[in-house]
Image 1 (tube, rainbow, N blue to C red):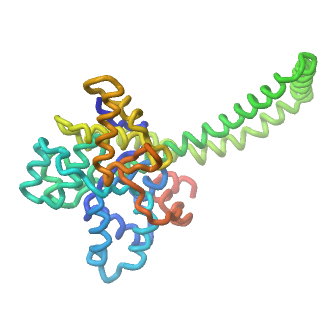
Image 2: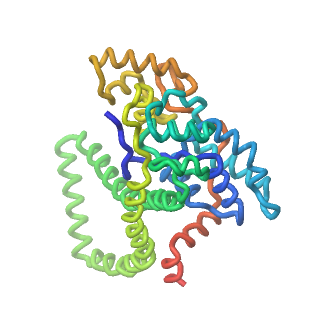
Length: 355
């Protein structure tokens, strides 16, 4: 069974070629200003998954990409603190991945240097391939040169998640606080429980009878109106963009190889289900895939594949694996001023309505 990434099931998995990543880094260093890709990878809208050669080439070629008016030191600093620390890097993409895929075969005849990114994309079958190289983009169903709409969609989905959390968290905290309080009361004697319930009922009756409930309600109405006025326009924009984003996601997702080896299936499972915080056991991977034999036999086959490619499947802790490894660069948070500027640029209608 192939685990297909779908919108709402987690961050969009994004692979880039060297040019696409360099281009975004340089754009973000001008201003400096956040790009949609940066916003998405910092807010769980996207997960960067990079072949090792892409990281090495960006490090080696970035100075040739900047212009005389660009700040090279700033570009490198942003690459190493805002992009790469949030990326998963795969040191080796097995050469037999995508071996029978016509897209990979076509690319091999034109530009073998881009094969790792192509093999990774078709092996996962649940990712987007941002590319500037025409060799990656000319093959239908592979790389996308006009990838900004995907980055915008991922950034918008990050805002959807943030909005959901913003609304749901207070309700969850309140509910759990009430449940925790009641669990404490429920452990007491029956007489104590009756006293507590009686006090709560009396307090509620006094709150209503004294007119405090009405005054509290009347006092909260202006606040509620202000919240609707402030949050309504951006939430409406986010909702409108989400439907457009779903179409973009569906149209540009790289489809999987028709015939996949066990390593490609394992990579798909690990890409969609494991993280550095939650690596997976071979048995857990085996449960997620269909194949010949029983669970024990599949587990043995999965474990053998995981052990055979240590630069692809990284053992995070004893017996637990993830696809690739963290880049090793120290993380930095987004600048607050840049965040506010990005949100103003992302929601021009909302910004103008509040002026």
